[in-house]
Every structure is written in C-alpha cells, then in structure tokens.
Amino acid sequence: MNGVKARWSGSKLHFNYILSQLHKHDAHFGDTKYLWNREIGIFLYGFYNYHCFFDLRLTAIYLQKLLQALTKLSSHGVSFLFVSESNTFKEDFCLNLSSYRLAQIQCSTTTWSPGTLTNWYYDQVFDSENRLKGLHSFPSVALFFETGNDNFPLKEAILTDIVSCVIADSNIKIPLNRLSFFVPMNDDSSCGRAFIVKMCLNAITEGERQLFKTFCKSLKKQKEINND
Image 1 (cartoon, rainbow, N blue to C red):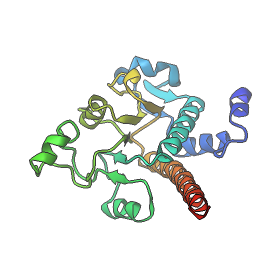
Image 2 (cartoon, rainbow, N blue to C red):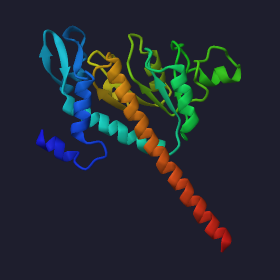
Image 3 (cartoon, one colour):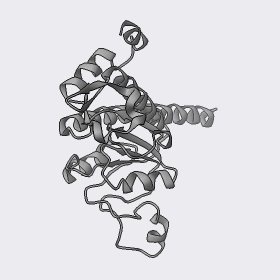
Image 4 (cartoon, rainbow, N blue to C red):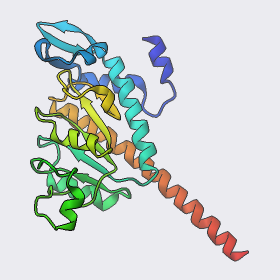
C-alpha cells in the first residue's frame, strides 16, 4: 500500500482522496460470483457471500489513468459523448454543459437506438429521424458509465474506432482488451456514477484550459510576428 501511495504522491488528485471517495460511494461492491467476468479477477479483492469486491487501490490507479487521458484528449479539442442507460444525465444538465465548455460534450438522454454510431453517416446523408436525442456530431471519445445487457452503445463505439472509456463492473461482457480505457468498479451505484462523472468533467475542463492557453500563446506569437 505504501508503494502505491508513493507512486501518486504530488499528483493533482491525491491517491488517498480518490480511495476514500470510491469507498464512500460504494465502488467496491461487485456483482454476484455466478455472473463475474474472469478477466476482472485480477482487480478483485475477494468474495463475500457469493459477491465480488473490488480492490479499490487498483480502481483508483485506473481512474487516475483515465483522468490523465481525458485531460490530454481534451487539450486537443476533441468531442466527447457521455453515455448512461439510467438517469445519470438530465436534459438541463446536458444543456448547461455546452454553455460553458470549449470542447463539445454531448450526453445521451434517451434510450439508445441501435445503429446510432455505425449508421451515423447514412443517417446524415438521408436526414434520418432515427438519431439519438442530444447527439449532434460524431464523437471522438465516448464514456460509458454503465454497461447494459445488450451493450449496443459500447459495441458500436468499438466498431467505429471511437476511444472508449468504460466503468467495468465484474459482470461486463466485452473483452477488456477491446476497451481503450476502463475503470474496474461497481456501475450500479448512482452516487458512484455521479462521482466519476464529476471527476471526468474536471479532467476535461483542465484539458480545455490547456487548449485555451495554447491558443492564446499562438495568437500572441502571431501578433508579434505581424508587428515585426
């Protein structure tokens, strides 16, 4: 444990803070032992009463990796899509996002329609009405805060080579090596999902600040060249 803490000492999000918040929001509860994906086994602390329990030290490390990746991607001005099959995202919340962020963030606020991503360009050409509400442009990065039984959104993101970032519960059915980034934790806790959403938004915001600083520096440099 001491080695893990030392690894993250001096980081913006202290390891102990992330660990305590994950525990507070029930991120350690997995699904039943009978439904678990054996690939997730290395991220489990153990079993109790036939239920899986995640090792939150590993969860915190993988969350840190995801946040760093989101900051880097956001600093390049890419578009993000937040996907959840529950009421994690409200329409007013999604509308507020677009009003004060540089990088485009979109949220799925309705039931996922199969073919939303794989048929995107076809739907655009023929002006199809079968488009997902709240999705106005093709995303570069998709964040999945829970995976349902059909996994349609995640499967489509993989097929279309979108960067996929997933909360991977113990019963996830998609092979982990097909995911760009994943955080092994409980995806059934609404407060846990809300915490991860907040952390991801903060990471994206940090990347947008870096993007804006880079833009200002290049603009200043261009003015200096024009003055000379």
